[in-house]
Image (cartoon, rainbow, N blue to C red; front, top):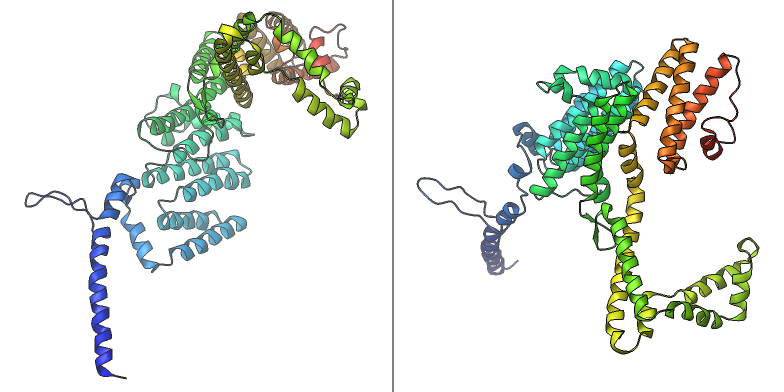
Length: 505
């Protein structure tokens, strides 16, 4: 090999390395802080970007020296090490080796402290999966709390990830408040001094604690520029208000009535109204307020009336004209009862309905003279207002908005408080085998429900209310059976039975 050529190649390599050091320094120069001797530097492009988008480790959360040491010890094979630990954790869980499972989770958290999914998955694993492996509800509760504490540690390393705060809110509210052992869990949670510390006893209800975490999550999104990824704003914004609904419901389930329960429902109604006043982004590209459906519908009716005033009777004249334009087969399909239509006729009906549909724009285009432009403007506004009202209707259905709004108002009435109080007392007496007292309380409770349904007749057809009342009615049937009595006819809540009783009953 030519020594001269080899020497030249080495020189070229050295020069290339030296040249590449310039952009490398420009890109990756670390930032420095101001000192007494010299002013600090913002660093290279990468350092500035990390600072701008808050991606440095100190901005993501706490820096753990032990965690950094473990990362270095993997020699660039952190992904491989993480996979091995995940497998070990799953294996220990299957073996029900809880001690080694906890140790492995600690190692995994040290290895990937800034990945929220690590904390979320294992927090769920502890609170939901591991806790279910125990027969003693006290042990189950302990593992639920272990999952919550695991998430709390995750927050220390992921200060800008609101999803971890949301998870704690969900675990505190739903896991403790909805589990099969929720009565025991709620009692233990309220008495758990180690978990709550100095939190006042009155604020230790699991629904109230969950609400505080949900509010903290909202605050992070609203004031700290954090992003709540993977969750609909509609659902996300409803969680804190729903906690107050569930809190009021839980009070009555625990036997707390009167002004305490009424105040809880009043607070829930106020929070629900505030939720309905929030701007909620939608998948349709517009923002809505859930409280505005009725207002939008009324506004649309006013706009349509003004449009029709510009050319009275025009809409009625257009419909026969549209029908005349249908083909004979389309008319035949429309006249055929739906149950007797063929597949082809269903297609023809769909085509015919599109032809027969008279939009506000269609009407406006037929308005002539000086009112033409005004008609077009009214038609556009009416169409947009109707669309917005329709979006609100769909989004309301997702969160059962109207039911909870009505429920919070209904539960504040004397009839509701009386009905639930007597039914609760009847259940207690029935459980203690005091059948005469149970019968008396059930009768008074059912009579109060009758008054309540007469006052709010929309509740009769409501599925949730119907299902709840059918449970009460079934309990009453059981009580009468033990008293060797039959259900009275007509029954005081016969309309509920007619609408909501399942055939199997």
